[in-house]
Amino acid sequence: MKKAIVYLNQFFGQIGGESSADHLPEIKEGGVGPALELDRQLQHAQITHTVVCGDNYISENKEDAVTQILKLLSDKEFDIFISGPAFKAGRYGLACGAVNKAVHDTFSVPVLTSMHTENPGVDMYKQDLIIFSGGESVMSMVEDLRKLAAYADKILTDQPLGTAEEEGYHVRGNRHQIWREDKVCAADRVVDMLLKKIHDQPFESELPIPEMDRVPIAPPVSDLTTARIAVLTSGGVVPVNNPDHIQSASATRWGKYSIEGMQRLEAGVFKTIHGGYDPTAINADPNRCLPIDALRAYETEGKIGHLYDFFYSTVGTGVTQSDAGRMGREIVADLLSAGIDAVIMTST
Amino acid sequence: MVKEVERAGIPIVQMANLVLVAKNIGANRIVPTISIPHPLGDPNTPKEEQWKLRYHRVGIALQGLMTDIEQQTVFDV
Image 1 (spheres, chains in turn purple, red):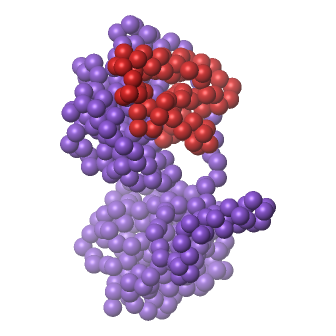
Image 2 (cartoon, helix red, strand yellow; image 1 turned 90 degrees about the vertical axis):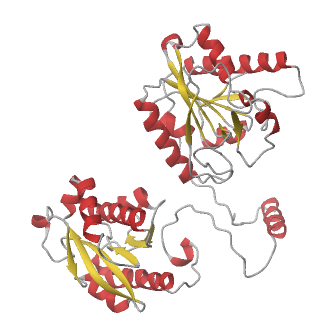
C-alpha cells in the first residue's frame, strides 16, 4: 500500500472557522474530515497524515507557512500529496497551490488538488500543477474527492494517463507526444482539416492557440544618451561551453552572460546552441544574432548611455508559452534590479 | 518574453525575421531582420555591407525605443 498525505485548511481540518484562520501549520496522524472520505475512495494508498493550516496564516505569511509545512513533512515518507478540494474558496485555493508546488519541488512526488474554475488559485497555479476541475462548494465534495482518488490511483499504479480534458483537470498548456489509437498520420489529418477549412466546415485544431493577451505599450525612453540598454535573444547564443545547459529545443532555462569590455562577440567564444536553424552563420559571427558590435559603436558615439554588462539568452524553438512567460518574468526581475531602462530583443 | 518585459513598463523592441509571429504574439515595437539563421548580416555579402546593415537596423531599433507609439508598430528599415 502506498502512502498519501493530505493538506487541509483550518475549517476542513476541524480546527475551527474564521476565528481559527490564524492557526499555525500542524500535522496530524491519519486522515481528518475530507481526508477520511478520500482514504475510503483511494484503492492503492492509505492516508498516513493530514497537514492543517489556517487560511489567513498562510495567506499572510506564505513563505513562513510553506517552510514550516515542508519541515513537518521532512521526516515523513509519502508517495503522493493531495490538497483540498478548495472549491471556490480563494485563500484556500491559493494555499493549496502554494503548498502543492513547494511539496512537488522539494520532494518530487506527484501532487494533486481540486478547485472550481473561478478560484484564483487556478490561474495562479494551473501551469505548474494538476488542478482538477471542482465544484463551487462543499456540496460537490464527494464527487471532487472521487476524481482526485481515481487519478491518484492511476498514478500510483502506473496506468496510462489521459489528457487534461479526458481526466478532468484544468489545462496546463503542456504538449505531449502520443500514439493515436486511430493511427491516422499527421499528413492525412492536416489535409482533412484544410479541406474542412476551405469548405467552411467546423474542425478542431490539434494545437489550440491560447487566447490573446495584449500588453499595454510601454512609454518610450525620453533620453537614450543616459539610458541603460540590455539585450535579450531567443537565438540561443551562449558561451561555447553552454554553462547553464540550455536545451537546444523546448528550453526551460535561460542564461545571463557577461560582455563587459567586449567590443563584439567573438566566434569561438560564443556560439548558438539553437536546434531550430542552421547555426553556421551565427557561429562564424555571433553578432549576426546579437549585435553587440553595433551597440558598442552607438555607446562609443554617445547615442546610448550604457550597454548593460550582461546579455540574456535562451532558445526560442518549441518553448511553451507558459515557460516563455515564466522565463520572461524571471529575466524581468533581473532587469529591474539592474535598473535597465530599455531592451532590445533579437529572435531567430 | 517580450511581453513580460513590456508588462513591467520597460520599453522593448523586438528585432525579428518572422514579423507576423512577433505581431501575433503581441510585441508592440518591431524591427524586421533579414533572415532566421543570420538575422543581422548575410554571410554571402562583404563584411562591410553586413556591418552597415547591422548598424542601420540596430539604429532603427534604438530610434524605436524613443518613439511614442499609439499601436503596434513595425518600423521601416
